[in-house]
Length: 380
Image 1: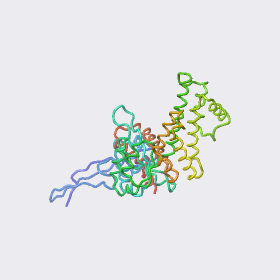
Image 2 (image 1 turned 60 degrees about the vertical axis):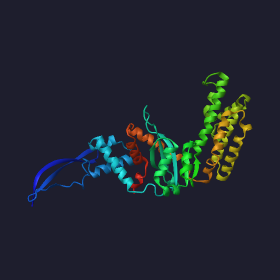
Image 3 (image 1 turned 45 degrees about the vertical axis):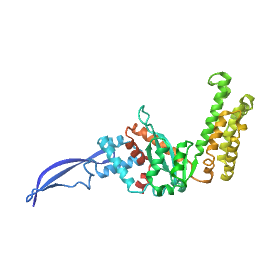
Image 4 (image 1 turned 90 degrees about the horizontal axis):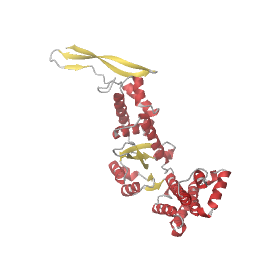
C-alpha cells in the first residue's frame, strides 16, 4: 500500500505552435510505501530525457531546424522560450546520438583532406584538419563531413587514420588533397594501397600564383613600385588569369599586345604554362588530358625551358615532385577535392551563424550536425 508523500510542478518546454512558445506544466508526485517507507516518483522518461527541461519532441524539432535549415541555436531558443545553454547541450547530445547509431566509416572508399581555420584569436591553435567522405559523389550525392581533428600536420592526419583501424585504411582507395606535403606523408605512411590525387583547383591555383608573381616582378623592375591604374601590367591582371577561350575580343587584343613585348618574355612563358594546365583539365578525353599534363610537367622540368623565368622553375619543381599525384586525377573519377572546399565554405557559414566558437569539441559536434550524414538520416 502506498500514499502520495509530496508533489511538485515541473515546467517542460515543448514544440512551439507557430512562433508561440509552448510550456507544459507537469505535476510530479512522490509516493511512499506505508509498510517499508520506500519512496519513488513519477517517471517522465517518455516526455523528457533525464533532468532536462526540454521535451523529446522539442529537442527533435530544434535538431531538425539546426541541421536541415541551418538555423542558429539562439533563434531556436528564442522560439522555444528556453535558455541557449540548455538547448545547445540538448541539440549536440541528440545529434551525436543520431550519428552514433549509424556506421559513419563503414562504406568510405574515397576521402578528401584539407585544413580549416576554425577561430581567428591571437592564442591557441587556429587550424584543424578536415576529413571529408567523397564516396557519395560516385552516385551523384553530396559529400559529407567525416571528422575534424585539431592541428594541421602530417602527424594529426596520421593519428586520425590510425585511430580508424586497419579495416578502414585498407578500404580507402583514393585520397584527394592539395599540394601540402604533410597530407602526402601521412597518406603514404598509413594508406599504402590508396592513390593520392592532387585536386585540379590547387594545381591551377599554383600556376596562377606564379603568373601573378612574374607580373608583379616585371612591374617593380619597370617602375620601382606596385602597379597603378592606367599601366598595362596592372590593368591586365585579371584578364591574364582568365581562360583564353573565355576572353572578350578586347581582352584578347590587350593580352596579345602585352605578351608580344620582348620585355615581358618571362610573363609570356608563365602565361603559356598556365593556359596549358587549364587546357589539360578542360580536355574532353581524360587520356589525352593526362598525356598533355605529363608532357607539360616534363617540359617544365627542363632547366633550359625556365631559365628566363625563376618563378616558373619553382612551379616545375613542384609539379615534378608530385609527378604521380597530378595525372592521377584523370584516371580516377570523382576524385576532385572541390567538395572538400565546399564543406569548408559551409563550416565558415556555420561559424558566422553561431558568431564563433570557443570550445573545439563543441565546434566539431556542431560541424558534424551541420555538414555530416545527419541530414540523410533525418530525412529518410
